Every structure is written in C-alpha cells, then in structure tokens.
Amino acid sequence: MDVNKIKKIGLIGATTNKSKFGYKILKDLISKGYEVLPVTPNYEEIDGIKTFKDVSELPDVNVLNFVVPPKIGLEVTKKAYNLGFKKFWYQPGAESNEIKEYLESLNDPEVDYLFYKCIMVETR
Image: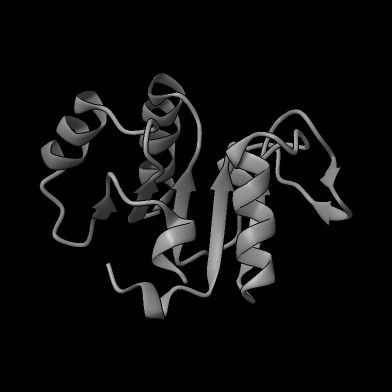
C-alpha cells in the first residue's frame, strides 16, 4: 500500500474519548491534512466532524483504517468488502489471524491490507 497515495481515510472505531487511539488517530491525521471520515455508531459528530454510523454510509475512500477489536474488525471487513472496499489498514491490536485468513481467502488481487504498522507513524 502506497501511503503517499492516501488522501481520504475511513476511520473505523473513532471516538470522543481523548485517551483512546480512535480519537488520537482522527486528530493526528486531520492535522496532517488528510480527509478523515469517522465511523462509529456512538456519536453524531466528533469535535464538529460528522460521523458515519456504519461503513455502508461511507463514500469512496482510499483506505479503511481499523482501531477496533479484531472481532468487530472482521465483521466490518466482510461488510466493507461486500460493499466494494478493497484497501484495509489494521492498527496494532486490531489485526487477527481470522482477518488475515478471510482477506487471503478472497483471492482478490485488488485487495490490499496492512497489519502491524501504525498509521500515525507511517504518515509522518
């Protein structure tokens, strides 16, 4: 995945809790000039930024970044893939063998995903 081509990011697991990475990532990426579309069923907005209740509401993005537990991540990944999303980035702790096995089982050459790399670090 070419980080330099990423401009618009769907953030799965965004939160208003300033101590959580779902908030820190949102603010960090926005401060770097990225367009971030937070996905969370829990809030209408975060710091004035409109949220999306579900991945199905998202417009096209360059990548979906996951900062949720792997069980939720797997469910959202399956739904997102069925909606046509092909680029997935799992924050450390959001990845799992089940997610990897699912993505590999798709046998789709357009699917691209990253594990074990923090988007805040990689976009410095």
